Image 1 (cartoon, one colour):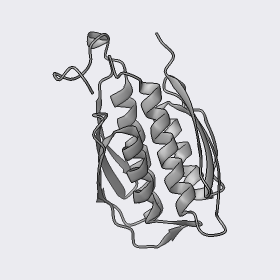
Image 2 (tube, helix red, strand yellow):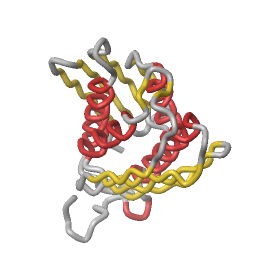
Image 3 (cartoon, helix red, strand yellow):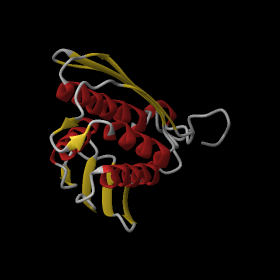
Image 4 (cartoon, one colour):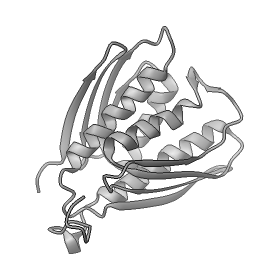
Length: 197
């Protein structure tokens, strides 16, 4: 099987981001965005998707984390899109309903090459660690846009903000794992009647 991996760099006046992914890995994470809580969530993404992910982000944190989070999402999305390639043989769709203590999140996604985010998550605090909670939507918006991903994220239950967002990242990881898996019954087929994705 062709190795499904990619390395992408993104340089702006605000950030420098390097991302490498191996879709057929074992969930190894080497993450350094200098935003501790964000690193923790990205490690969950690697672990539960079984994608090996390396991320190094240097950003203008003296201003705030916004640019670093958004540009990490853009670069990771581009890396996922490149690693998936022509999409031949993948399941394309993924969905997962995940609980973490009192929190429950549902994620459904489609590697359709039509970027769209539906975000129904509500936080009761403005920050987790040094990260603004509003930036999680920005991250997934950026990732979906760059990956060509239709992504629906819904909070079904939860009062603890840490549990809420961690359940989101884990459900997203499980959904991605399902969607990028090669379907043994259709390994040479493009999962679309259009003939293109």
